[in-house]
Amino acid sequence: MIEFRDVHKWFGELHVLKGINLKVDPAEVLVVCGPSGSGKSTLIRCINRLEPIQKGALIVDTMKVHESKTNMTRLRAEIGFVFQQFNLYPHMTALQNVTLAPMKVRKTAKKEAEDQGRYVLEKVGLGDKLHQYPAQLSGGQQQRVAIARGLCMRPKIMLFDEPTSALDPEMINEVLEVMRNLAREGMTMIVVTHEMGFAREVAHRVAFMDFGELMEIAPPREFFAHPKSERTKLFLSKILTH
Amino acid sequence: MWSFYIEQLIHSLPFFLKGLWMTIAVSGLSLLAGTAIGFIWGILRASRSRFVKPLIGAWVDVVRGTPFLVQVFIIFFLLPEFGIQLEAFPAAVIALTNLAACFICEIVAAGIQAVPSGQMEAATSTGLNALQQLRYVILPQSMRIILPPLVGQFVLLIKDSSVVSAIGVMDVTRVGWLTVQRVPQGLLVFGLVAVLYFVICYPLIRISNSMEKRMSAGVTLNKM
Ligand SMILES: Nc1ncnc2c1ncn2[C@@H]1O[C@H](COP(=O)(O)OP(=O)(O)OP(=O)(O)O)[C@@H](O)[C@H]1O
Ligand SMILES: [Mg+2]
Image (cartoon, rainbow over all chains, first blue to last red; front, side, top):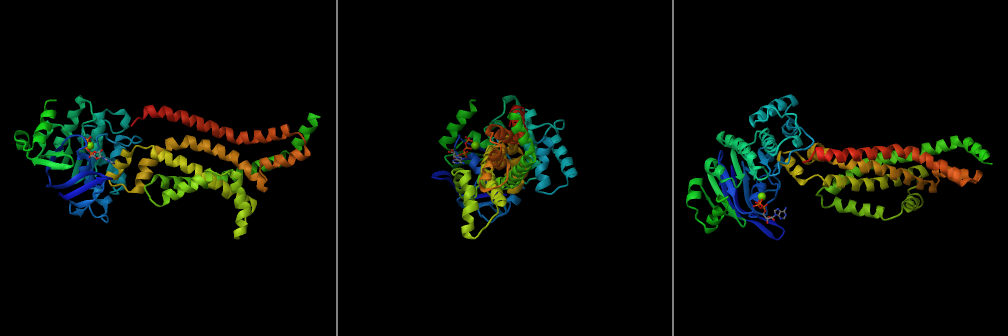
């Protein structure tokens, strides 16, 4: 479904991704963790070319993201992206936020888009917040609208960039719950997060990223019980004591 | 003595109203065209285009860095040297349109850049194309930032339009110049000229102020 082949990415002089090799299967849930600045966000932002890569091959759902002639608009419609800061459209209600792309990109009729929007917002537990503006919602509610916005495009892949890091602790669970359900339904997901409980329970594999490299990637049980590299051990000891 | 002058002034009132109409025509046309062009330039200037962006930037700098009077003279007296002969009225409208476009371009570009980059990223990631992003996500948010200074700029441009009297456009200012030669009461004549400009500008000033107030109130209500 997603395949990185020796992918390199530079920001000017800064070498941010140093030869990434990675294959994610359909319906797989991959959790990516690692210290700040290690390139986790960049890794998943390359998948829908929010960031272009400079070397290597990146194939998503048979489309060659590394080739500049690839029609990204079409591919992006198949990939939901959830940001740390939600990035909801502040001038639109929750329902308008989730129906914009279906109407404009998929050309879904308004009525149909709204029916679907209502259904998806209900699914993330916000059936009573359809006509609220983002500013009137809590952080956890906003992030759930953001997830719904992605889901309304009926994506094949959902990418999450630290979806709970900007949330107050008591709101983290409501968002993780939505993500758990998604995983259960067989969505292909890459989740950048430090919620190790979520990783243990939901992920098929967990990857540790450091200095622009995937240091280690393994099923959660193995990953947590027997981390191979010293840096993974060090990192885990730091975040698991939290 | 005063009453005599006032009477003369009242006699030339139709003349003034014609001038007022000319001022409105020159500024109205220029603001309309200048706003349209200014938005296009501003959008391009805020875009990532490598080619057009510096070109517009350089042009805006040139226009902002030279006196408007000189620009008007160049269009009216210099273009004929290159075979482009213009009447005073179109020359004035072209000069003021260009000036308006340059100032408005800067306001629009600043308004677009003030929208957090995450908005564009979110829109991009749902598959909206560049035009759709602009139309549905970026511009509606920028408009709140753009509108108050835009209307404020209209006021400045209407006042700047007085400069075109220098090439013979019969606007309020020129009517003032001609009248003062018959009615040697500068204070009275140009007092009237000032009042006429004020009558056009004041409503715009009020609109701009109230928009600014509404916007700063809206910011707290509608935080990101
Ligand atoms: N647009 C950019 N321009 C230049 N450098 C960037 C840009 N985005 C990220 N970087 C740099 O690239 C490196 C990797 O950034 P990235 O955001 O991918 O890290 P991260 O692992 O997501 O970190 P965090 O946990 O803090 O989110 C960092 O050193 C960062 O400063
Ligand atoms: Mg990050």
